[in-house]
Length: 383
Image 1 (spheres, rainbow, N blue to C red):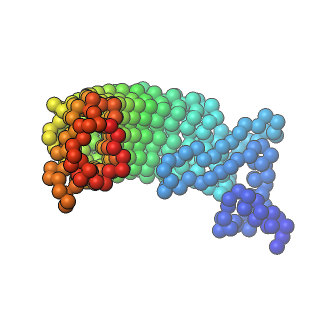
Image 2 (cartoon, rainbow, N blue to C red):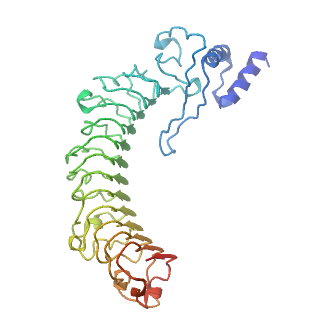
Image 3 (tube, rainbow, N blue to C red):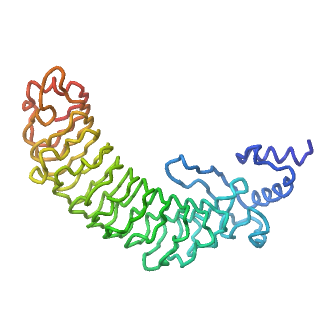
């Protein structure tokens, strides 16, 4: 085997490249590129794939002050790994472009071959119209931790991204949801912005959306914006200014996070329309027993229910399938076994494993004698 080929294979192993990616006819070109890059900087690159949870910062590029200057980049068509001078495109993952954490105030040109583009942790404040028109193959777009404002975005900047699946715009200065959004979206991350209202038609047509993150905004109204999201699994609306729950939930929903709002009441049978709902978190609201019907939380699918730090005076009735119930920090003054078991006998009992009642007005001696029979599965009961 020629010495150049041997060296290529060694370097490929150090960089995490597979032998299937190695092309002997291009070894000298690849080697020249790698040696030039290693003189200017070092990087530790881990490809980010779809089955992972989030496109966490996977590529770091430390600045170098004592290195030789990079040659002027050739036109984009000159070599398959060429990309804007401000960014990096690893040769063994040519569909990814890393422009993160570089103090950029503008968005560089995105080559048409790119599928994964990372612009996070910069100083970008605007997105011009047509910024992504050339990059119609984009699937992941990371724009979080910038200074992007709604008034400084083109009206249809995402209009041509018909394959976009994940859009990260959390930690910006948005005052409204971007629109229109690609129907292909599966995850939309808009937490830590300044959004105050979500119109009922703001998410219209996003039938593929599975996860919506809108926490830490100033939203006071959601309307029926969630109702038509037929694939939605997770909705995080925590840390907002909501005074009522969204009008209608999708049947596909499994996780609903509404903690740290100002909700005081829930309509009758509100959760019954979502037969797959598993986790409901509504701590730190203003819920009262007067604002709940007798069967509001009596849903057979719910496994975890967090109602801590509200204004409840009685334990709401829950389904026997519930496994974790958090009620600490309320004003509960009685322990009613009928909240857990409508009938108490050998065959009828609750599946509850964790029950938190600490920080209430209830006393330990208020626990009824038939509680151990009803709550026989419980491993933690705190009063």
